[in-house]
Amino acid sequence: MKDLVILVADIQQEKTIQTLLEERRHSLELGPVTFDIFRHSNHDPGVYRQAGTFLGAFTHQYRYALVLLDVAWEGSPGDSAEIEQTIQADLDQRGWRGRSAVIALDPELEAWVWANSPHVPTELGMTWEQIRELAEREGYWSSGAAKPAHPKELLEDVLYRTRKRRSSALFMRLTRRVGLAACQDAAFVRLRETLRAWFPATSG
Image (cartoon, rainbow, N blue to C red):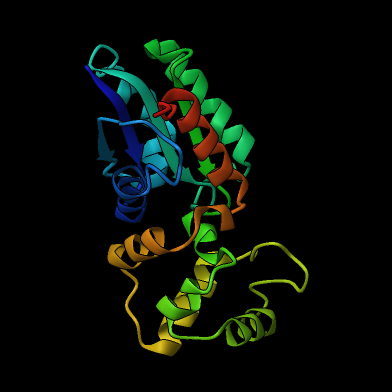
């Protein structure tokens, strides 16, 4: 029996979680974790509607189950708590009660990109001053807000202007380099605390 099965909506989520568990485990203060990650072919809507059915087949193969998806997608209920509760209820009925968690990324994974770290502008090819000026001018990020209201659109605009390609490799590089304490996004904090509770680092 492996430790953890993970269902995600896209390759960026997959590579981010993979990098966290394989390369940032000690920064997360986790013990060793054996895991498998599956991507749903219907992305966020598929995860929302079919996570319980998909993961129900694995209840005797893994100790824990983790589900990740964005809040922002066409047809979404639009509320992270509602999304998490709906999927969690489905998981509970499929044999995962007490050993599963759902993390709805509000509004999407790109919110994690905008951690306060010097590595973010280095990877994106634009200074923090340029990013914030662009973000406020275009309405992606309100002055004084902790994170942009439109993180995906901001990322795509910055990459377009710096002629860089949006890719899973970019998310992997950011996950490797950005200090995890710098990411105070509520979904990331809950992910970190959930994993620590399941797989605590052993002393010594």
